[in-house]
Amino acid sequence: MNRKKKVKQTLLKQAKRSKAKKATNSNKPRYISKAERAAMETSEQDSGTESQADTTPRQDVES
Image 1 (cartoon, helix red, strand yellow):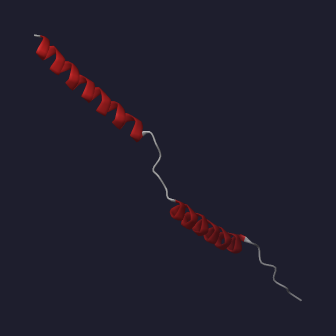
Image 2 (image 1 turned 90 degrees about the vertical axis):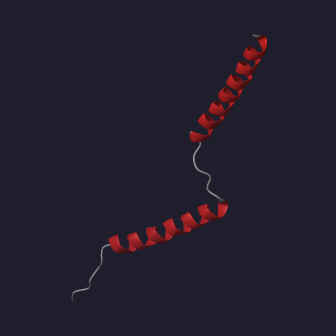
Image 3 (image 1 turned 30 degrees about the vertical axis):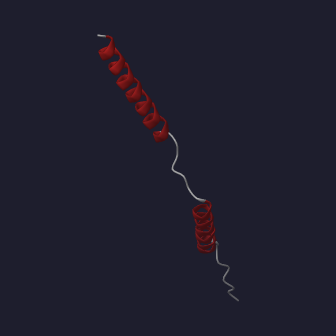
């Protein structure tokens, strides 16, 4: 009886530990490396300058 109880306790303990480990990882955001962040920042700046150039009103000189 004690042997069965001990085996059951160890299996439940392992299951509980693995379940807790999986639960904590799912809440974290995906890791983005420094190089990827820099690339994203430059692409945002590039797209930002293009969109600003398109939205600026043109001043046509009509004389």
